[in-house]
Structure formats: C-alpha cells, structure tokens
Length: 120
Image 1: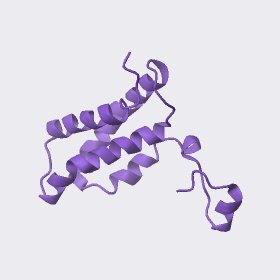
Image 2: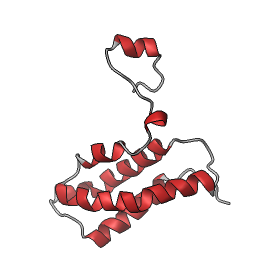
Image 3: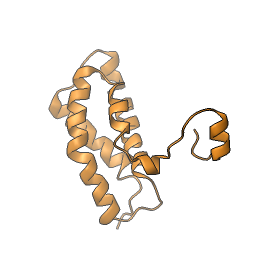
Image 4: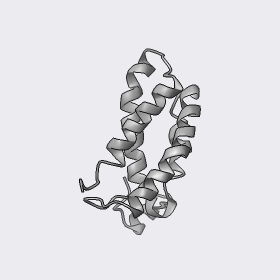
C-alpha cells in the first residue's frame, strides 16, 4: 500500500504511483471484473454501470457521511463484500441468475456505500 509513501520512496521503487483520488473509481472496475468468472463479470458489469454512478452521486450531493471516504474506497468495499458473498457459489461452480445477482449486488451497495452514512 503506497497511499502514505513519499514521492521519493515511490521513485526509489521504480514505479509510478497515481493516487486513487486522482485516478477515480472507474479503472478499478475492469481490473476487478477480470478476477470474476466470465458469466458473472458480464452481469456485474451491467449492474455496476446501472447503480454505482448514481449511488456515488447521491453520497456526494444528498446525504452526509460520518467520515470522509473516496469513491474508490466505496467501490472496492462493494467488490470485497461481493467476493465474500459469491465465494460459496463460486466454490460450488454455480452461477447465480441475473435477478439473484442483482439482489446480492444491492446488498453489497447498501453495506459499502451506505455504511458510512448518517442515520438522519
């Protein structure tokens, strides 16, 4: 994790570091989708396009968070929750229906994007 590394430290490692706050959340999607099964990835890509931008807009403009978080952190949290929920079906080599996948996705959004929101 190079989030807190100085530019000098990063340059000594011979890599280029671009902060998630500069990069945005969109590049995280294709990278994560490559880790998913092909049929799952196709459904998840549609769900991400359908829900994530709208939910991030709501968080940025209409509600109040209890603490600061970047859009990338919200999205990665959603992906991590999805990975854990989908692990049993992946182990059993079962692909969920699109309807079931959408329900699981909405649950993951609620607990990732909604997790830091004020109650009122």
